[in-house]
Length: 264
Length: 219
Image 1: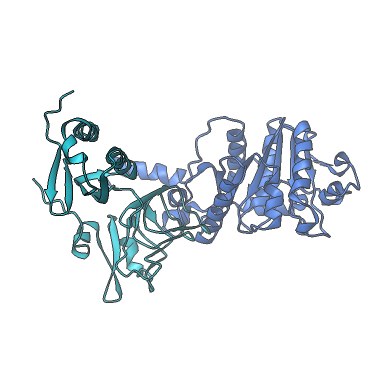
Image 2: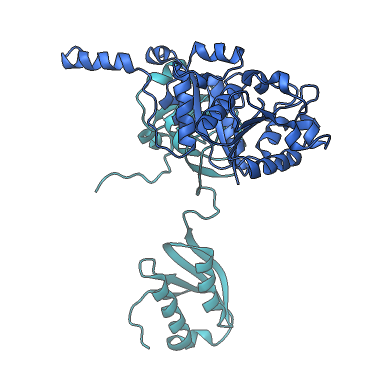
């Protein structure tokens, strides 16, 4: 029996879909059988980020309404044999499936796959209820902004009231320079408010945008710092103890040097 | 069984009896002595016409069950009519001064309301709301909104280990913390109203606002 993890955030645009695509790909890279599920019906993006848009035949709503079998709707990834995606419908809206239907689909997928990553739509309404219905665990994505942290807090509150187990936090799009100058919230500030376990921090990286536009998850590119961060998150999901990424490695070394000479 | 101690004193007054019960001894001893006196040594007062009884428990904090136990013994004697029972309320019982204890994290979008005084062990996050008909004491960070004395009690206060609220309300006065708050040293503080304006002060100055508090002055 596999494990279903919902990737959620409350606020839009913090990187849920990117995170889902990259963690999913990173897990596949580790040799796991993974299925990504897009529950953002009407505004599906996961297929675009994965570069699988042109392979979609059936979608989540078709499965829920019995127009096709689950296996027919699954889209196999270009790169990995063990990575699949269940796309959302683009022509319907969130209310065209019920949480119970999604739950049944996830339950079905759990028999076949080791990890099911569910991409949750923004908001706390019907779409959110759909996304968490079948999930065992949750990853909450936030960025170092007050608005995103506020929404993440709201989502954590809702998750705590639900059946989903203790949510884990991903802080996305950190810019070490801005954190250092005090213009960006630092990890400690965020953790103090949200008070949940941190599972990873992802630095802001232009390669992520480039990769998303070319339909190739960043995690495939070992030169990207974000890719390393996503791979680390995947390893933590698998139970490895991986230390958090040192964001200010170069300035840190310089600081040590300065300290040595009594300048700081 | 002989009871030598004098935990239970019975005084006669013009229209009845006063049972003065010691407030230092263990409650169990008190009950057994009371039972003994009524059943053995003081038979003379229990025979005859109906007698009104006032019970005074002194400064002993007693629960409803304790009172019930005392009444149970006295009720066993047919001619005693209990007129009153005096005792200090137990801290934590339903009376208005008691603190209700709660714990957890109040997250964005969540609302906690309590009738009475509330001691909250945990954080109130931005976007979270805590409302209370009495005082609010937060053992944690107050980053959200707190409203004390919602029913119009202007005496109510809001105290927090870390006071950085988005907004504070006491009765119908609303206050937004000035921006310079953030750089202050962190210490436990409380908010209160004077002449309709909200003030913030360190917690040890609470006694200036609350004259009825028990104040520790050292030994």
